[in-house]
Length: 157
Image (cartoon, rainbow, N blue to C red; front, side, top):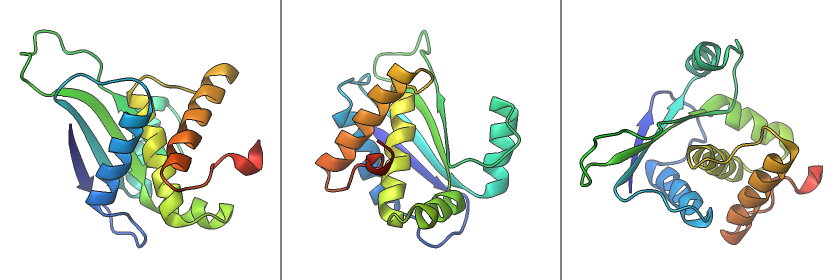
């Protein structure tokens, strides 16, 4: 799997490209859904303005958010050996760092959670219904706990 990391902002507390790739890989491995061979995911770290514009343009919500996922969907006619783009995960570094402080979490743990969350969206998981949210949150928690972090939903369950 190819994980393209793009850093388009400067914020303290951001994970390294290696850490980002590691969490995306862990999310894929731990979700129970195998992506196509030669899968590719792009992860872009952005500032507040870029995430606000993306949220406004693609979700009609003119506000900043922590993470957005853009699943690519099937691309018909692609040769079997070509990389299949699973999609893009866009994370606002400033929001993730602020949320970690507000929620009393380590910045690294919150980054891991946002990367796992965004990656699961690319793999078809969602939280639109109560049942879907319970499934996705349970999966996020199990991936994070299996990799040495605490359940991010523990205090809200």
